[in-house]
Amino acid sequence: MTDGSQLSNNPKQEGKFSETPESHQYLGTLEELDGFCNEGKVKEAVEVLGLLVKRCHPVDLPQYLQLMWECSEAQSLQEAKFVHEQFIRSLSPLEVSTYNRIIEMYGKCGSMDDAFMVFNAMPTCNLTLWDTMMTWLAKNDMLGSTRYLDEAFEFIEKMPLEPSVNIWETLMDLCRVHGHMELGDHCAELVEQLDPLRMNEQSKAGLLPVIPSDLAKQKEKKKLASQSLLEVWSRVHEYRAGDRSHPNTDKLYAELRHLREQMKEAGYIPETRFVLHDIDHESKEEALLAHRRRGAGISRPPQHHSQNLHNF
Image (cartoon, rainbow, N blue to C red; front, side):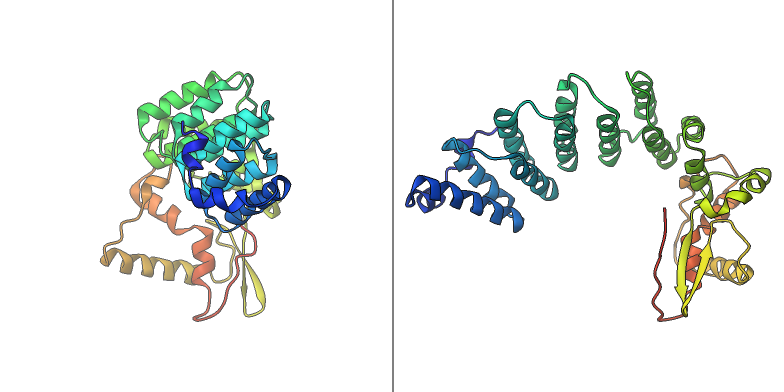
């Protein structure tokens, strides 16, 4: 852990604030800190924090949160650790929501070891903290193999709190990406139990096969389904993945298939591993072809502006 004297050992900065009275010096230093944060100058901002710490001047919660945000955006791990250390020293005890921000900061900096250190030090963890840990484990590809996915499942099963639908959906998406279909199917079942509508959204995105009888049952709920709305020539058109009710469906699909063949000739290979269930290769390609954004995009006139108004 880096100490304050190392990060604040800047003679120019020291001299700049030593010429004014104590109160003015403190206010000037705070203004300098805010200025560096607003400009995204992380190293300079943390140097000023070091000066404040060295002179025993207080730094309040919003300023620490702003510093953490800047460290996250710059992915500056050394500065993040220093800010965390001073944060704990000056403002303990912290709210659970603040620890969540610290975990997120380390996740964005790519240091899941530090994130786990903060997580494991918590006396109690709420679902928000668990969600944050799972999210950043996934984003840092810490679960990128079948073995780790199985371990993640066991880890979730042993949680002292009931796992949220977000946690199961995160694991389901990871299984989809890494081809662990058996575990992915199980997670999909859990997601469906906790939030059936969310599972319908996944199905309509072409990630899961939809049984015709199930579609019939959901017909009454069509207004709640995922929608892509496209303004074309002052009119609004609605597209749903796999939905063939649009008057130009045949033309749209024909054009999509034509473009797919041209793309294949140019070397494109459809990423069918993103289709979770064990169906034949041709069906997987059709599922990807039917994504609602493609339907919306292909119908746009040449050189015409379009706006995706609503998309879950």
